[in-house]
Length: 195
Image (cartoon, rainbow, N blue to C red; front, side):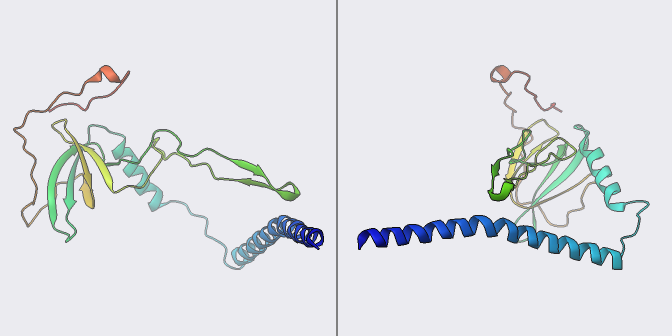
């Protein structure tokens, strides 16, 4: 009786695995084909215009051009959760998210699927500025004094000074001495300019 039960369970497992292996890719393929067919039909009914310019691309060009200048002066306001200004800073270069990377954080991994299908993860692409974006609440900015500011939370930046109508909650002690960065531990390391 035990042998019959074991054979029966094994048969159910084999049929289930075979069914999952054969129907999942074909179901996904059918869904993809249906969606592509729908999009094609809708684009025929409502063709997209042939754009001669792009304000969105122009804004991105302005942004990347400004960010390509490491000495461009920006004005940074960190904001409290209430929306009031927490602190005001004059920085050199853009604000960076601490989770931005200079190397690709993902590697392409492909596994052979059933029926010759390949299951591949998407490889992350760098932004035009050479950085792989990340997502963190912590940010880094370089003060015009050469100090490195790491902060968390909401902020606003502009290349024009802000007009603030409420006093800042925090201030930077500009008279405090700045400690030098030891470059002995990094070959080719960069130090922010002072002053």
